[in-house]
Length: 150
Image (cartoon, rainbow, N blue to C red):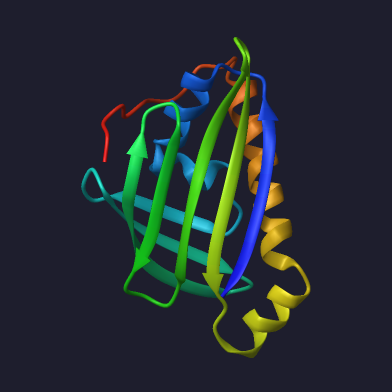
């Protein structure tokens, strides 16, 4: 099992950053390799990814969700074995630190080599930078929100 931890500061209030992160179907707009996400229930999402021509599908179960604080998940079924948590930290009224921790199990030789070369870490770093750009370019206005707890 491999681990990645990354964070970024976004120039929006913690509520805005959290609200946007709960809009899973918008992830393809800032996450590289994510083709589509379907929200199947309040706690279940279906992911379709395509990286270097390899398409994968898997479900992710939200295991914990606390508004303005954290969203945790684990994959269920499919080829992608992963679990993670994203936390939101208020730095001041208009700035939030978004921290992402991801545990994943690379499959096969290509993924293992990519893992050793830091591909996933670079992907996560890029995704967080694109999230920052996405929410800040919207003027700090999220595309939606889900404020429930899991």
